[in-house]
Structure formats: C-alpha cells, structure tokens
Length: 113
Image 1 (tube, rainbow, N blue to C red):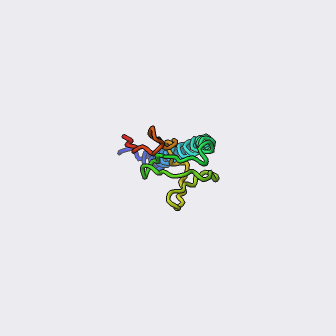
Image 2 (image 1 turned 60 degrees about the vertical axis):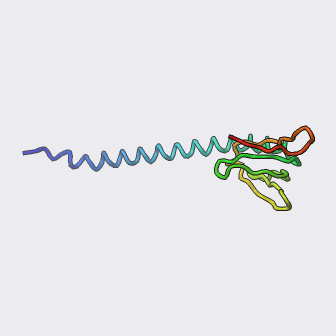
Image 3 (image 1 turned 135 degrees about the vertical axis):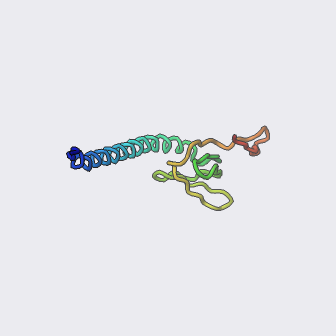
C-alpha cells in the first residue's frame, strides 16, 4: 500500500509557493515605485533649472524630443516647438540637456549613439 498523506499536503504546498511568488512580485513593484518617486523629485528639480532654455531630452521609449522648455508641472514638462506644445512625463526622461550650439550660435546637428 502506497502512502497517500502527501496528496493532502501537496495543495497546501502549492498555495504557499504561489503566495510567496505573489508577495515577492508585490515587494518588487513597491520598491520600484519608491525608487521612481525619489528620482522624480530629483529630475523635477533639475528640469526647473532649464526653464526658458532650448533643451534636448532623451526618453526611454520614443528616443528624443527638443524644444523650448516652457514649464515644469507636477511630474511633467511642457516643450514648445514651432508653436506646438509637447508634454513629456519625467518618469521616462533619461537625459536632459541644453541644445548644443556651434561657434556661430546656431544649433548643432546632434547624433546620439
């Protein structure tokens, strides 16, 4: 006769494993949210320094955006280029810099690798 006691403990073991994995995923998402909040404040303060300047910013998804930085509102910035406004979420901004100019004061062609 084979022992059948393991059949009653197997579902409990599976439940514990599933709950552990969910808890681990929840902890990871909370840590990422806290880290992002800290970074947002820093990026927000840094973006305030560029208000009124022609900037070039690099984002995670769409590559890059440029234009005159009009204002920083909450966790977003407003860029104006050719009369059109673009709003960019600071969560996705990797790099923010003033648009480079050549010796004559004209915009340089920017080739980011």
